[in-house]
Length: 241
Image 1 (tube, rainbow, N blue to C red):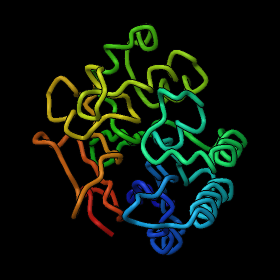
Image 2: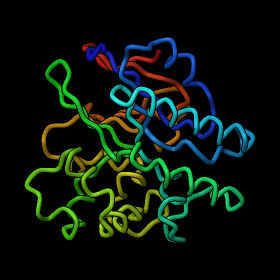
Image 3: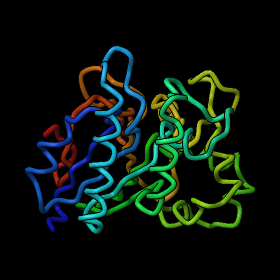
């Protein structure tokens, strides 16, 4: 496995733009950033293509467990956790039971965060970015931890308070919270220095739809890749594949 290059696949929403890059690089680690379901209305994808693509991604994880990471996005969470308050746009009530069963059966395949070190940098991957203001606002979840890292976050995937905190949405997305959660934060929430996650991480995420390419904050500590393209992270940084 080549640990010096990582393939990053942002929000697929049923599309298959990831297939050729992933299958063409069989030795590389792959990180999917979540949101496999609920296609955009202006990018029509049939329901059977969505479910086939989703199952194919899960099968890829099952076959290559050590090199494939699947993260959870808000479009999986609103089927998994079943709360009306967590339902986002394009919630498909007709497919909800099917999606729930697939997610529940394969929940062990999914994480909320992944991290690695490369060329002296520490990278944190999540669906929407981990805002330190969200961490601070949820002391009942994170108050007992001196540092927040991917191991801590993934250990909470069955914690009811953590699941509740995932529903936090800020005014950037029409919510009332001071900061959005790691599946709901808007990329522009990371323009503030107060958003910086302790530990010196460079954060890589999707969720906020982009037109044309990468969004990054002014400090080079947050990158949003949700533009329907696959990226490579290596010692030289991020590049489109």
